[in-house]
Amino acid sequence: AEVVGVGAVADFRLGARSSPMSPAPVAGRFVVRQLGDGQVLCTGPMFSGWHLKLGPMACLEHVDSGVKVVLASHKFQAADQALFRHVGVEPAEHALLALKSSVHFRNDFQAMARDILIVKSPGPCTLDPADLPWRHLRPGVRLGALR
Image (cartoon, rainbow, N blue to C red; front, side, top):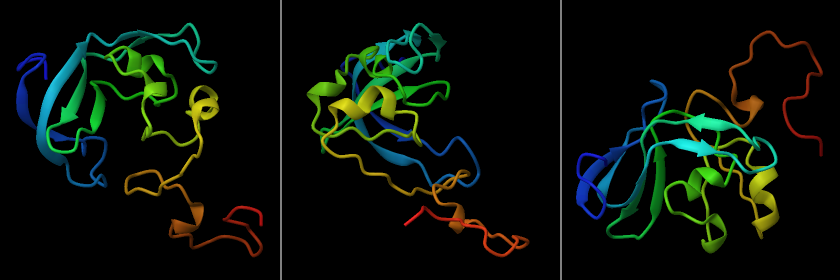
């Protein structure tokens, strides 16, 4: 995104870099909306005061759907709204936010959410322990939520 610059339209392949188990990259045509240096000061309750160094960041907008994607060069839990604001996205102004975070997002995002949907996705970490290929569990070990 840095190479083409803000306002440019280009084809990108996003994702699929964290593990061999990751799904294929998402390919599409995007407008580069904003760039950031990745020097983020966290403001939310979980990481307040942390100075992150996430490398170059970008906000891209898919040309056909209008979906915005916030990207960072280095991984970090999407647990602080400052990550979005760094590249010009105000989380409260969007009807839907999709975060790649297991549970850490709740401290800074839950209060603004009408609903929270947890989604199972492919990759090296599973959402549901019952999905793992257990072979030597003792009888009675609970793998799912209490009901």
